[in-house]
Image (cartoon, rainbow, N blue to C red):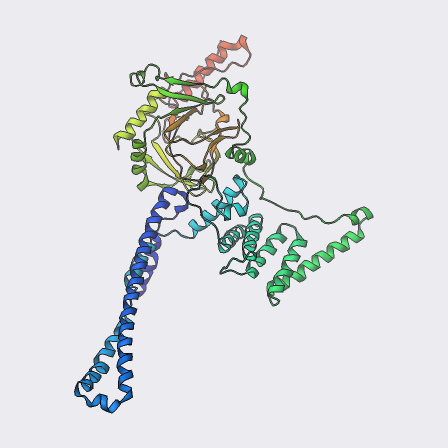
Length: 566
């Protein structure tokens, strides 16, 4: 029975914990209040300890005066019957009371509160996730370690800095991931801060131990040997460093022998370090994506820019927008991306956020092979889904999207609300299902995602743009606005130029909500068309085929028989 209770006590905090704090800045704010509560509890504990010590101190001072007088004339002192009685009383009763006071544990309240709150603390996954976010921001926005360490980031309101110990921890996280490039950068930063005289709980020996090995793993043997010798100057008995020194010297001697046996030209060439840098990436457009996140590489020419306009939009004479038309701005031409200004109010935003916050869960993607929902490292955010029937504000927002786009929202997915975390991002992806994902939205029965509507529900101090690497477009968050684009051509084919990404949030808190509109219900709102391909003599055939294709897309349950064209 005792073991059962112990096991439950150990497992309960973990079961109640909320992992993934690092994926949502909105939920991280709750931790601030938690920590504030703990600080208040800690100060109460300190005050209780101080009161306790003050009582003990007063008692000690009183007895010090008393015993000083008594020891001068012990017989005369106890000869007084009152003094004799009080001596008996003190030693028999009062010293026991003092003992109880000294043994009294004033920390019970604080420890109890800490134990309760610990159930909701971040875990190792959160700490590692936040560390990786800093490394991601470092790469995406071309930041050096000193800039990050000193907190010199654009748009910051509350400047903070990293200690040598913090830099060391970042290096260790990179080391654990076999990311020796970032290990070297952050261990060097930690070493610099220690060399500048920063007092820290870590020592140079520990830093040099990681640094020398990270450098060696990147192929710079000369630097690795130099760092190892520096380590041994500080700690001559360091077992691993002594072993590494012998190994490095052996490798270098072997290389010299190879050079000597080579031709004269080759022998004159010095061995150059083979720096790995950032590991080979799985994302082919990584460079374009990160450049666009920094506001670089945008491909909008002045000639094309002249064709982009701002206008008032009445939703095709929709009564709701005739007297108060919506403000439209062309953000891009191909694909056409339109921004609607002042399209959602601050009050509506707060209601949507309040509805979503309790439901925020780590955002997932649909596995293209299994169809299962799963979390991935390239999508760092939390999301929640809101239905129109839950709240009139959500219903009103849905109808606004329908009125302005002309598309039926009855077959659309629920309003998805997302809050990005530390370095929160969603790497390049398509909203629509490709040909190799025929079952992506099969369960919904509403066809493919024809269009995307994206609300920006917060301003972002730095970073957080929506970028389209295929066409070199960047759209920056602006609170109260929304952007809209079609994912499919009118023929029903996917528009691959809509591949887009949410850039990492460098500074600030990014809230968005989006509505994915589907094909079903749009048959007469956005009719299928054929694509002219230059074969005018076969135009009726292509028109017929396109019509048939649209019918198949629209009514997949119908049984189309074989047909012939006369």
